[in-house]
Image (cartoon, rainbow, N blue to C red):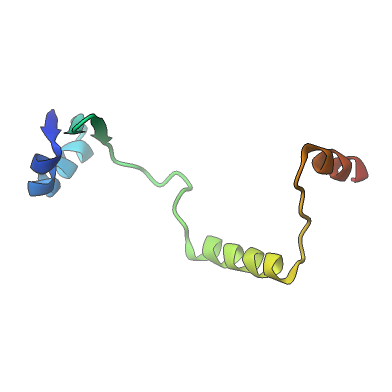
Length: 82
């Protein structure tokens, strides 16, 4: 099914349900073409546990408790030091 962006916005729920049910839904917007596809939870969802880990890591970085590698030479030297 190929639709315009205006058709999609006018009936988004209809087309999302069609994609969910396995129908190929293609939206054309000028020179751009998009496909509506359902995404299963493949580890891309930020769970509360993952958010807590991200927050902790950001806090550590803010405190300077990290190693900054800015070049290939920095990376090589760091890996050699392990």
